[in-house]
Amino acid sequence: MINSMQGGEWTFLISFLGSAQQIRPANHRAIMQKIKKCYKCKKNIPLTGFNKNKARKDSLQSSCKPCQRQTSKKYYNSNRKRCIDIIGINRRRRALENYIEIITKYLNVPCVDCKKIYHPASMVFDHKVGSVKNIYRNEGVNYLIRAGYSKEVIKEEIEKCDVRCQNCHYLKTSKDFKHWSEISFLINDYSSIIKKLYKKHWNFFDFDTFKIQKGEISEKFSSAMLERAHVEIEKKKEKIA
Ligand SMILES: [Zn+2]
Ligand SMILES: [Zn+2]
Image (tube, rainbow, N blue to C red; front, side, top):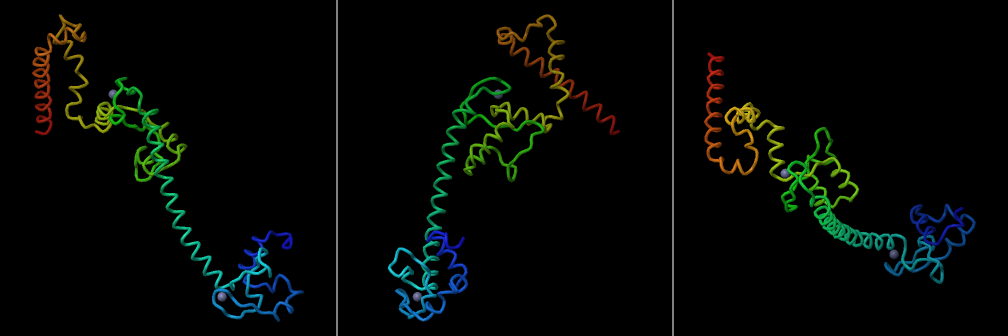
């Protein structure tokens, strides 16, 4: 198996085993008797101190094993830096491509709540209730794009989301986190209060009617709301007392 190996693999194997002795015991004595001058350190070294290189006349490297190891290390280090640079550039390119695709394809859609189309900068990916975020530190889809994640990972995350405009997103979040809990009972009663106030004009949802009566409605509605709020506060006071 070892004899059928390619030159590169052969050299690689020898350099890792550190010695040719184990591989060709039959030639061992003959090789040990010969020496060669290392091109790098200029020392005279037995042939076993050189790695193989079939491209050369004597089928051996021009520098000894330790010198070659040093050269390889230098090459690897400079190569590594170049590789890291290239990875960085590729990541930026991928992030940019993903941004463009997301903006033109996924964010250029009507809001799931109000059905209006806005500038993509006004739209957000809103995780559906119960979906599990596959993201470090609770970051959103935008983080995945910026960090240069693959399209597959990004699409997988987008599928867990609804696309909302910022306004509807804020409204929904307020409800979810009960930002308006103090007046929620009034907001829930909105329709019934309005209907009571406008029994005669129950078609107030018609926009033209609303426009004409806007001032009047606002005034009456706010005083009705305040009245109800005061009643609720009084009730709470009584409970405490
Ligand atoms: Zn050397
Ligand atoms: Zn909306």
